[in-house]
Amino acid sequence: MDLGAVFDHQPDGRLALGREGCHSRARILHAQGDATGAEVVRSLLARVEAHSNITICEHSYVVDLLVTDGCCRGALLLHNGKELGIVRSTAVILATGGCGCLYRHTTNPEGATGSGCAIAYRAGAELTDMEFIQFHPTALALPGCPNFLISEAVRGAGALLRNASGQRFMPDYHALAELAPRDVVARAIFHEMGPEKNVPVYLDASTVAAVADKFPMIAATCRTYGVDIAREPIPIAPAAHYMMGGIRVDDHGRTNINGLFACGETSCTGLHGANRLASNSLLEGLVFGRRAAETIAGQVPALGGHWHYAGREKSFAGSDIEALQLVMTRGLGIVRDAAGLKTAEIALAAMQTAVEGSAARCILDLEYRNMLQTARLIVRAAKQREESRGAHYRIDYPQRLNQWRHHIIESVGAVI
Image 1: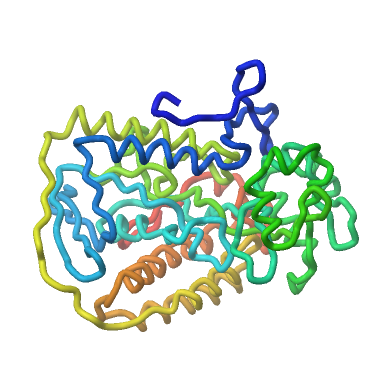
Image 2: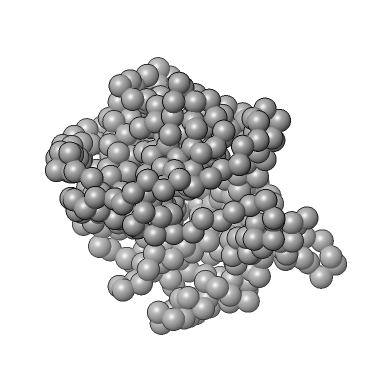
């Protein structure tokens, strides 16, 4: 708020707070009902653009980090999809978001490909908890419609989940019903969709008074696709949403590589455990982003970054992102087992072999390489964890086991 973000208030001037899954009380700020993310981005971007000491380099893609003598010294970038260049620095912070785009259905934006994890891994950074991928239970599911998130706050306001027969089913799965942990709700919906996953499941928001006023963006989007949320149930299905794992960092955002930091969803602080509580990622981003910045300001000598032209990228092999997404959706989805994980491992290894020895011809190919790397790390960790814990659910190992009460740490040449 001090940086300019404007959140909703009650008539008496107090902040208006919403409630989400597993919360015992309303504690979530919101803006314009359900446009909170847009307001956060608007206010932060305005401050960044107005800051005289920040240079934004648009249309640039990180190819790899520059690491010498165990220290990160900058990054190799592909600018405008044409020119390679080097930016030198005494510190690098990776804040590249999650990996939802590894799946066919995701609530994430297009850039959430897990590239930060792959880039850090190749540089020698440790990754951890990669098997824990959270699926949001309620994404809009209509033919030809993008995967649009129906906020958990709608259920927090009183919306109910119903199956194809119109029956409310969540009380049969958990005492908290619609506000049960996300992994429980997602698996319940997954089960109600039937063996072929083609039976519709609905979110009934007609039980929420003035629902269109409380959630105007959701109401407008659904109206675009012919659904009046005040009168009609909303077709929904689970979608990949949040990566609990990522680049392993300490409580100041430091990785095991000197000068390399990470924060936000691409990092793993351990805060979320195996199953993130709704909206805690925003708190984590605020706290650990600030800690990383303060650590750098206090310990790293200033060095003006500069661009060094390195030449043009070569043109070689292509990519098959849709095939990768299908492999991940089938083998590394809401419910997993040994057979599915093995099938996914073999398929991803074949994709990796197909692109080895060739350079990328464009940013899409660079993303595909990174997506392959991150996907294989997720599969490796998921195969190793022979239990069910949080968002990692295996039907062949349905119990949570004490011997697995530890992190799986992955680095080049090692899985701990």
